[in-house]
Length: 286
Image 1 (cartoon, rainbow, N blue to C red):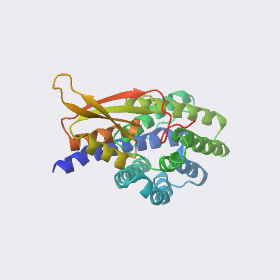
Image 2 (image 1 turned 180 degrees about the horizontal axis):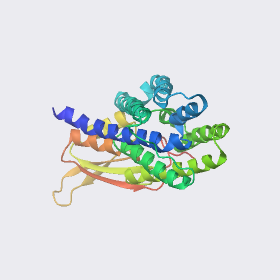
Image 3 (image 1 turned 90 degrees about the horizontal axis):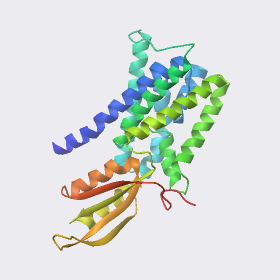
Image 4 (image 1 turned 90 degrees about the vertical axis):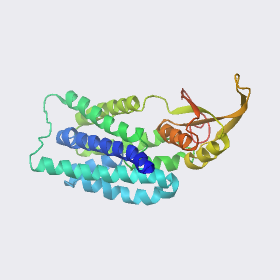
């Protein structure tokens, strides 16, 4: 029962996040001919070009990426990715039904595109921020970026290149003005994601004091694939010798890190701090 409740606390917020994201796409983005990045952006582009439903294209485009990323992401992370992607398609289909039956009237404005860009960015960012905060993704470019990042490329750079290409191609179907407003949407969404994620830096440093330091280090190494350092320490009051587990993880991995530690030692002392810059394997290389 405890395990079910623990999974529910992760899966339910991911469902809420994908619902908010899908609402932003259908209520603000599509009716006003704005764009989005990633695989969702390809789906939006196909919707403008051929009228294909976004709910179907996002799912179809992600299926080969699921197969590609299954081994690269691990079973648990891939499970959350599949849940996020499938739920996004389902919510997109639900809102498509609501709009088609006029149960929801999409917000459209021909004279205040900035207002649309602000609300679209806030809604999309809030949805994705919730999904990322609880360890999920909506699939797509995230999977490719995680795979290529292990070959020395930055995830941020990879995503930026893909998004730039997709938004650039969209100029065939939407005006330059709409593309510029799309950049406003992307900027606001990224800031909202960072705000919800509680930090604007690319990584977090964790210092963990526990009587089960070796077991914690082994789990972090295997499940997060992050390097871990065990540093000798001595309690000032107790005089007992212990080892401090020190590691640096991506900001989206902090929740999984805390979950690993709590599962092994609920009494562990954890300190997580912002990291301004990280050089090394798995992060930025110079």
